[in-house]
Length: 89
Image (cartoon, rainbow, N blue to C red; front, top):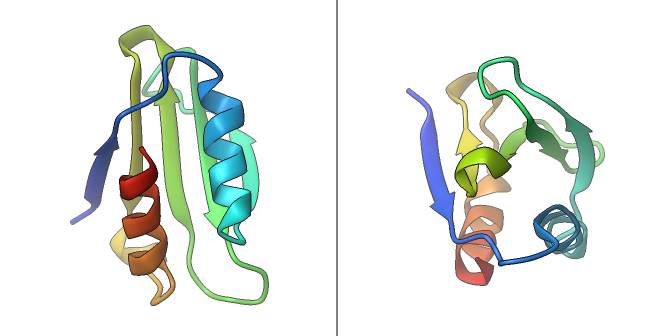
């Protein structure tokens, strides 16, 4: 079962602010989209040479930002990263 963490997005520059926060934590940021959420921005967040992919989604239509850990993509580095992002947002 996936673990979703809802974040409190800033009023402006959500994409830039989220991507910078991720890069500041040492993450590689790969931007895409999800058919399930039209007009959303979806990220795969990784760390070089380490297993695991953390997912992030910004759905501007609902002003909703979240990160998600999927069981098949989970890695040890994610817990401190999730904690840092939850604290930032």
